[in-house]
Amino acid sequence: SWAPLPVQYADYALWQRAVLGDESDPESVAAQQITFWRAQLAELPELLELPTDRPRPAVATLSGARVDVSIDAQTHSGLVDLARAHGATLFMVVHTALAVLLARLSGTTDIAIGTPVAGRGERELDDLIGMFVNTVVFRTRYDGGESFGELLGRQREIDLQAFAHADIPFE
Image (cartoon, rainbow, N blue to C red):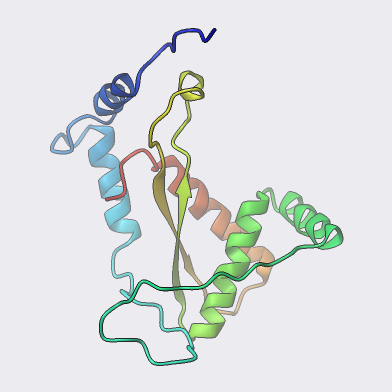
């Protein structure tokens, strides 16, 4: 038989509201995180112009495709070693590499990549059913004049700040 859960989804929602506070209170977590994201995303280009195989339709069709990418064990090991050497995570290395690729393909220096985060930072939430996912945007300013290691070090700090402000619902 299953043990009763220590909290219910409604408990989580009430707890989150209490922790975040009222966004009209400048001392609240909500207000501080909203201020962070407004500054972080200020003047972000609305669209990343990438080369395409056909013109962008006037009305979005929301159709897309999927491309599978395989990373062999040797490459994975190299990426992990690179992450360790820079005090970063594998996620940060791959994110930074993707930002560089997008910058080079688009010819721009300002890249934003959104990614889902679990939102399950408390052990009591492990067995709870419900939607806890949030979106975090990682912004990369790329000028091509620094080494990948330097960019990774800078991006590591940006990523850590983004994760530290991931409590406020992105919408």
